[in-house]
Image 1 (cartoon, rainbow, N blue to C red):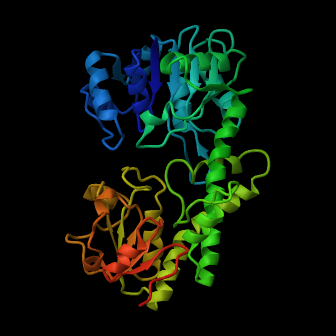
Image 2 (cartoon, rainbow, N blue to C red):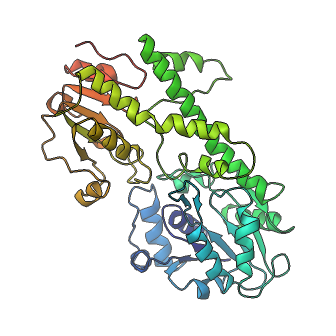
Image 3 (cartoon, helix red, strand yellow):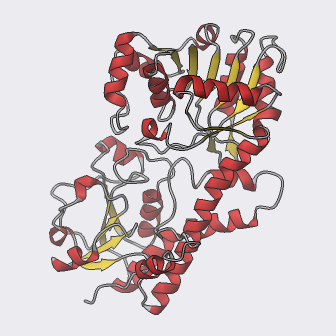
Amino acid sequence: MNVAVIGIGRIGLPLSAAIAGAGHQVFGCDINAERVAQVNRGENPIPDEAGLGELLQRVVAQGTLRATTDTIAAVGQCEAVLFAVAVDVNDAGEADLRPLYAAADTVGRGIRPGTICIFDTTLPVGTTRAQLAPRLESGGLKLGTDFSVAFSPERLLMGRVIEDLKKYPKLVGGVDAEGGPRAAAFYRAVFGEDANVRVLANAETAELTKLAEGAYRDLNIALANELAQVADAYGIDIAEVTTAANSQPYSHIHTPGTGVGGHCIPVYPRFLIQGRGPSALSKLGRDVNDAMPAYAADRVSELLGGLAGKRVLILGLTFRPNVAVTPHTNAVDLLREFTARGATVRGHDALLSEAGVRSLGFEPADEPLEGYDVAVVHAYHDAYRGFDWRRIAPLLLDARNALERAAVEAVGVRYMGIGRPISAD
């Protein structure tokens, strides 16, 4: 089967490589000419994506994956087109669909009769049917007669996309009558007849299912963050509370921290907020989580009697450990809050270049990392394990409750977590 994947970024490239690795001919389409050239040389632009490097080299050498900027020509050779174009929010907090609109307009001018087009992303409810599917008719073909459209939410974690492709059920919902069944048949063809594919009633059902997953996680984290603040007020360790509460099988409380970052969880609840129907809880969850960086900075300020003139080092600027992804990272929010309270802040990330650190608004920390008043561990990369915290700062703020407090205290450093008692002076 010939398959076009539109967008070969963090999701689209490993998806392309995996389909090509199963023996299908894949055209990875992208407007980034440099990325296209790099992929065609077999070079991996996402080194922290597990398993991608070796697989990419193999499928490029075999000729089953070819990247191109000529999307119209590519889709004209394919029976299936997958859209893996990232959707973010604009300044108003609503879905910015412009890149996806442009991609759909382009694909519409090239698709051939009989094509199945699948939007493999996350969207506000109703977007596939009302806004995207009609754009695919730009070349004169008619939806439901000449081609089919389905929505299928990506349910993948960056850093392990290839592994996750078969780990979770693949959900599909059609726009036209044949869209759902044809999308299901496609995924079984590329991932094996035993692939767990579920056909939902329609595209809107699949769209809301993905938003429900994201809203659940965001609200759960918001609950954990509120409980952590209660724990702080009473000197209770939220880690002990959560472990005890989750021993009851209906409790699944998440881990608190200084907010929620990344492409997904802080973004997708906003797709609910902008749509029809009630969304008060989703908005409340966003408000609670967005307030956590200020809450953490205030706790440090209270402990130290103010932050004016204090030197603060923020370690791990990506949105989560061991993956060099920075959109919506809370490290930027921590920089803003500590700076607003008078601190001098420096940033360090073992996965980012100096230019990458600066692009987030940080002044890079000088080596060696030492002589600070406060160290904030935002993303606990493997590279930070075994650090001599005593040299870096006398106080460590564990922004994700990821470190072993006993190990920190054992070297004479005060430990402060989110919802965890502060070490004695």
